[in-house]
Amino acid sequence: MNGQLRNLSVLLDFDCAARWCSFKLAAHELHKTPAAVSQNIKQLEQQLGFALFERHARHLSITEKGAELADTVSHMLRDLHVKIAALREDSSNDSLRISCTHSFAMKWLVPRLHHYTRLHPGMDIRIDSNDTVVDPSQGQCDIAIRHQLYTEGDTDSLLWREQLLLAYSPAILNDKDRQARQPPGLKRLLRYPLLYEGTPEHWIRLLHNHALLDQQHDFAQNYSHAGLLVQATVAAQGVALLPAAIAYEDLRQGHLRTLPMPPSMAPASRYCYRIVTAKGKAASEKISNFVAWLHGEMLAMQTYLKQME
Image (cartoon, rainbow, N blue to C red; front, top):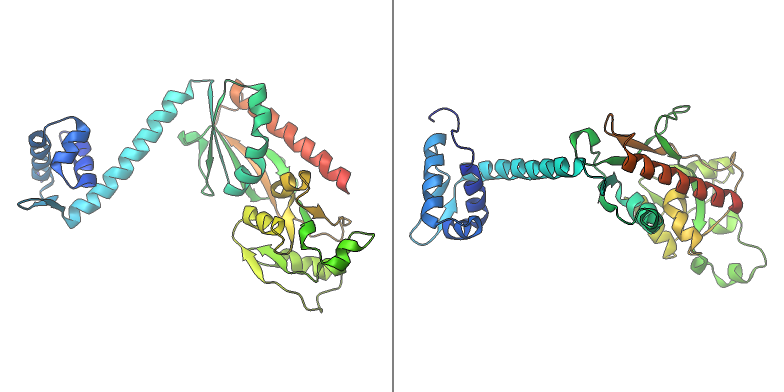
């Protein structure tokens, strides 16, 4: 290998040629001639000291080392494009990039986002629903709404301390429960399948609180995300202990009902939502406006849930 790469622009040609496995098609995308692309790839191979492609009479095939390098270059270029886009938008007050979990985006944020856009009609909202933690300081988003373990007394950047609700769909009730004058109580609801996310830990704590652990219960269905758990409950697959924020919209629309319980008898959630912004960016107008709106919507949800008790 003749030292470091002297011309990084040839990596663009290589990335394109590797994706197409064709100098001709790469040249068409890059608006170059096939001969120019071929020459640049040869120069790159000479600098690297190993072959990237095997040239056959009528086609190309990428080598093993070429495939490894193509994967690295592809990721590098993708990250570069993301960073450039973030830097371009950083000075703009007309766009806001929000990162949050799939469940929070689908079941809480998106259903009420029109409240915000009505107040700020010119704002371009972009939501990245991703359960992977992203860092706003790296330019990946303006605001991250993180779902994480709650530490008692830690209110820094706290958006919502999650709480659990025992919920069910009216459609799941059998004829006897549906015709009863009073809503079904805990013992009757426990006769239906008990749905849960991850582990039945919350159900076990509730059953323990009510001295019902020694009875038989149907823990038939487990879901990987809170949003899926809510959807299964709405679809009358069973009853569930649901995170209030994720169940909120379906409660408001009447798709779900809850069984009120005193706090001492209901299992507590160990999770919360926090707002994270890049250092020094929280005071910007577009971010502070959106954070204020988030807190206002959470307050409205809290008021609604208290009225249900």
